[in-house]
Every structure is written in structure tokens, then in C-alpha cells.
Image (tube, rainbow, N blue to C red; front, side, top):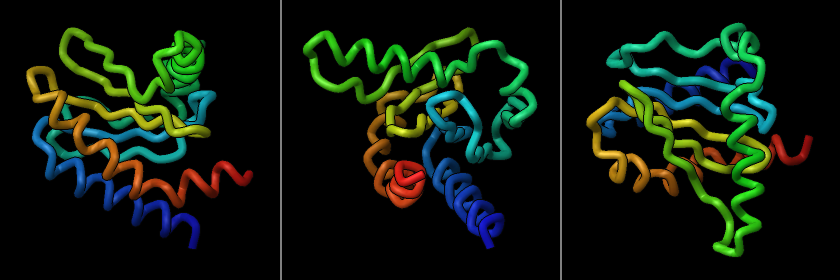
Length: 136
């Protein structure tokens, strides 16, 4: 049952990603960068992240974001909600959802603000998962 629930969540995330122009993937990790779920659309020109590929990095990017987010919150600007990282051919929006990090994979040239605007909807949909992870 747990794997079927995970599959259902992944399918729902892929469906949601398909409705947002330029959003090609959603990866959910814990604060150490360990992958919990990933949903990559068929339009993605990247291989879906796997636990093996994440484990090969010496420091997962998501774990680094968790630390940076904590430090940025100390600047008295309030809680760091999300961080946008722009690469040569992709944009990644990291969203702080303790105890997890939500990473949105966005095609280069896409409307990043439109992707950011759906973060509250994603947070609401993932709230039950967040609560389960917080309790463990």
C-alpha cells in the first residue's frame, strides 16, 4: 500500500507539472538531500533523478539549500520561502518545506514567476506528506 500511495502521489505531481508551462519535474527530498519522491514529465530533457545519482554527489544540492535557507532566515528578512538557481539550460526553484525540500525543475526560458505562483498549491497538496515526515 505504501508504494501504491507513493505512485499515486508521483502521478498526481506529474499531472500537475504538465499543467504548468515550463515545469518539467518535481523532486522531493529530505533536508539531507535523500530523495523521497520524484515526478518528471515526458517533456523533460533530463533523466529523472534517482537515489543512486543523488547519492553520488558529495553534498546534495538540496541539503545545501536547507543550510542556506536556515542562514538566510537569520538576516531578519523573515523565513526564506524559496530560492531560484539558474543554470545554463535549466532553472531550479528550491522550496523550504521542513523537514523536506521541494525542488521544481523548470525549462530555460520558462516563466519562473508562474511556476513560483503555484508553490502554495503544491505546499497544500504535500502537507499530509510533510506532517508524516515531521512526525518521524
